[in-house]
Amino acid sequence: MSMSRRRLAAWTFIVGLSLPHPVGRGFVDKATPLLVDLGGRFVEVQYFFSYPPLDFYAWARVCDGRLQRAFAVTDEGIVWNKGRASKEERDLGLKLFELRGVEGRSGDAGGELILHPTEDHVMRLAHSWSIDPTTLHLSSGQSDLGYIALAPASWRAERARKIA
Image (cartoon, rainbow, N blue to C red; front, side):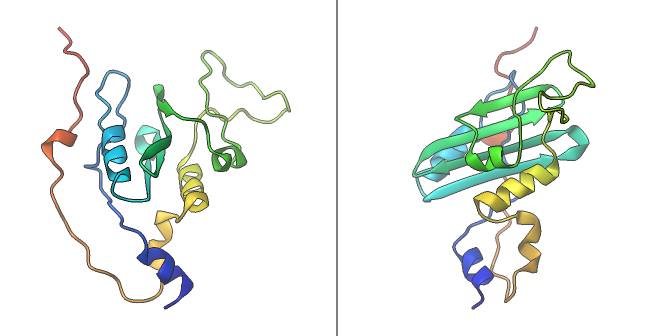
């Protein structure tokens, strides 16, 4: 068994747009409870979300049942920001803060301000934490059994309060 195959064998992947994601400030956070619940069953849980058409990027990490980091940003700004930025996030040069009314400016060091992560950042972070999911097809060996299931209705986005 190759090294990459052994590395993958230790993981369980849950993939799909039906997973709860941090929709925004006006919605109930259903992603954190799911990740923490899974964190009680697995040693480590990681979550990555990238949807470039909506400029929506997110990641989270739960270790030993404790939420270490959760972050999401949309074109509306940061909508999920729990825990401290990881060393791997900082190593990628991500400056994860909101600036309002600042356009076309350079950072103090003369470089471009990074106001928004990209899909590349999300996949590079996934690689730094464990495995880049876009490279799963490159693993050698036989594919393992997978399951297809409907997501529970309780995962659907829900507004935090009703708007009149």
